[in-house]
Amino acid sequence: MNCQRLKNWVEERYDVEEIKDFAKKKLVPTHKYEIWYYTGGITLFLFVIQFITGMILSFYYVPHFEHAYKSIIEIVTKLNMGWFFRSLHHWGAQLAIVFLFIHVWSTLLLKSYRKPREFLWFSGFMLLGISIFFGLSGYLLLWDERAFAAVKVATGGAGNLPVIGNFIKAFLRGGIDVTGETLIRFYAFHVSILPLATLFLIGLHILLVQYHGMSVPLSLEKKAHKEIPFFPNLFYKDLIIWLIILGIVVTLATLVPPEIGKKADPLAPAPENIKPEWYFLFLFQTLKLFPGEILGLNGEMIAIILISCGILFFFLIPFFDKKSNRGEKSPLFTWIGIIYFLYFVIMTVFGFVS
Amino acid sequence: MKRFIITITLMLIHATNLLAQQEKVDVFPAVSYDRFIIFQTLAIFWIGIIGLIIIIKIKLKEIERIQKMGINKEEKDIPLLD
View (cartoon, rainbow over the protein chains, first blue to last red):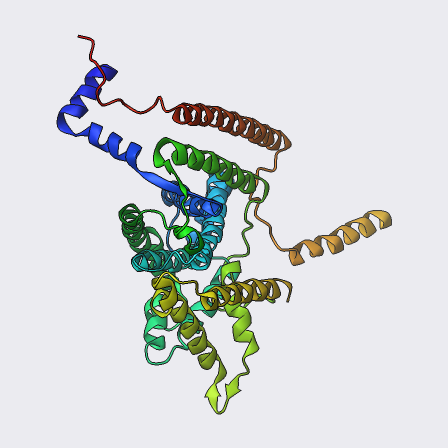
């Protein structure tokens, strides 16, 4: 079957011309803040890398506490290019979370969450939460002593939530402590539950972007701005940025492959100066600020409640920011966004150096 | 004989240091030839990426030039040559 016959075969069954027409007619605004539009596309591209490398690694990984560590060492040392795919998966995850954070903050500062795009904000925020859980669950799969201690601390922290804390802790751990059961649960989350949730949310997010169109910042909304076709103009620009990102991920994966520590021993004490992954450092540092007891109450529990309230407020910002919804400038929420950003950066840096 | 015993004893003393050393897993090929091939491939990979970026950039400029001239739009009442 030659190309023309194949084209005819498809065109007989599907209205390809209509799709082509839609792609050509779809316009996107162009202005001085358009650079932030690309962060969403970059994150999507990194998710694709994660899915591909994850599928390759899953052929060889053994999700059992006795074999998990050994299987990763075999992937890295014996498998052809195994070290590279593991490294690519690691750096892809790190960069995906970096760009998700940038995407969320740019959305917040440009007030792109305002009416009618509230569900875009919620779906994006949920994707950030899922990605962080992806990171945590993937970290334990290594089954080395650092990952083991980090997951113990993270799940223990969740246990401090009032009422539902103990249930969440037991549900995540699959028991009282972090054991082989936890590894199996985290594996199930990492390779089946979270990818399905991610696919659903990405689909919904893209669908909503198509439905509402790209958001224009409040300051430029009433001014006349140029529009360019999505295809091929923006698509080609996206392609250039994806190529650069691919180059960066591959370079990092080659030059800075992630280390593997000693095999986890549930009976051994946690290694000294244990630190979680960088995206948990601000939480870790916040917990350190609180004393063990405040007015007779557990200090850690109070810290977890305050952090949860802070995250919930961040999640519900589209409902609180009434001015943006009316199309007016709301400097208060710009400042709230800046304070959140500075807190995150400062605490993460403190977490690194302390 | 005395020298031999001292040498063996010193070797054994130094060997005990190995027990304290943390075992490190090689997360990158250790053979220098493999390393050379990997770095060479990385350099070629970047050349490929830069080349592709240049091609896309040229293509995009050409598209934008055509769009500016307005010859990309289809005319509604264009006469058909049958």
